[in-house]
Amino acid sequence: MRIGWIIFITALTSAILSVGLYRCFEQPKEILIRESAPAKYTNYTDNLLSGNVQRTFLSSSPTNFIAGASKATPGVVNIKASQGGDYFWESLNASSGSGVIISPNGYIVTNNHVIEDGKTYKITLHDKREFEAKLIGSDPSTDLALLKINSGDLPFLTFGNSDSLNIGEWVLAVGNPFNLESTVTAGIVSAKGRNIDILKNDRYSIESFIQTDAAVNPGNSGGALVNTNGELVGINTAIITRSGKYEGYSFAIPSNLVRKIIRDIRDFGVVQRGMLGVNIGPVTVATAERLNLNKVEGIHITDISDGSGAFDAGLLKDDVIIGINGVSVRSMPELQEQIALFRPGNSVEVAYYRKSKKQYATVTLKNRGNTTELVNARKGKILEDLGMELRNLTKTEQERLEAKGAYVKSIYRNSIIEDTNMELGFIITHINENEVTTMDEVIKSLQVSRGVVTLGGVYEGYDGEYFYEFRK
Image 1 (cartoon, rainbow, N blue to C red):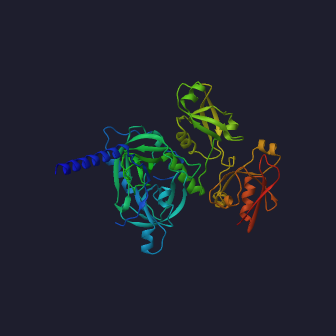
Image 2: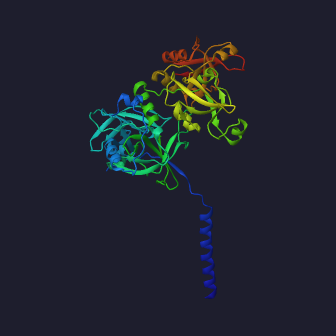
Image 3: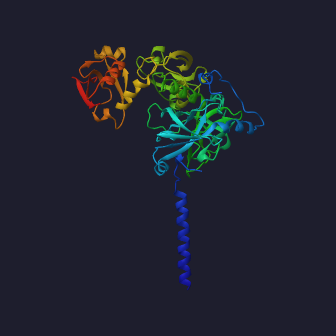
């Protein structure tokens, strides 16, 4: 009997120690949720979009959430995106999220990941009315999409100025998940300019999120982040969690960026991206010491693209950018956010340090093709469908290569162009034996080509001409 007790106590002690050691060494899994969820059945004006109402708003003290909540909730809707078909099939292939009405005539902004797998979109308003929505356009690189319903005199949210948000300021997260009419939670702005690396599939992605501790859960994606005055300061997008549920970290796209992206989508069908034309990196302690900087902040220019706006303005490698148009930028996401507010052809004032001396330069932004032209949605689509990005050769490259053409600067995975075994850096000089000297000429030729298409060109540093074929 005594031996039995000894065996029991020994086994119990071993079990307790095993569980304790497992708990000590187990690392909880971190899960990042972009809050799309399975569907469950239960004064936007041009003035606002153009930024003419930008102003600074500070939360009242003591803070009262009632006014902000009552203004915001009627303008937040439920969105169900589905593949269509019969009821059973639609139920299996549907996702649900939230959206924000930003005009009285039915424009609705939401996250791209809420609608990206859908073909039909059902909108349920705060008052239970239902509408079929049309997708105007989307932008995966910022995770935004614009929908439109045919109705008038709708409640809508007014854009606020996300740049005026302060750390510690009260905000409200408003959603309409699962047709539960609305949810409102309160929190503070925990940080700005956060990059959480969720938009990994787009090299031009912009992540400069507003971080809050307002509770956001699956189904609230695409909903509104508002200040205590009820003004839209962000679009709720993601949470970071170890349990799969809210744990204190939620992220929203700043409203100033939202305003610009959706206006581009509405007016052009594609986002107009202005670019400085620099390669950048963070300012480290070692970089700050080498460049004799007083603070370890700003954005370090590691290289300048020949012929870019930054090149034309006289910016140099090892300059450190600290501001755009008077707005301080301390990190790469903050710089990307500020530049994303402008289009090719716009000029911005860049504040920077060069050898510890503060200087200013006016930079005219250019597009991916290194021109100031606005991009036509039709032009961009042919290249996107084939799976490549082009730019014009610079004057220096033309002189060095003694050739004209379009430079292939990106090839998409699993695309038509990748299947041809083309390599980055290929310079397209001929299409079906017809000479092309610019990116626009390549696009025009591709648009009219049919059947087998042959791309001829050269690689810098390699002799001879190369050819790649595909069927269009």
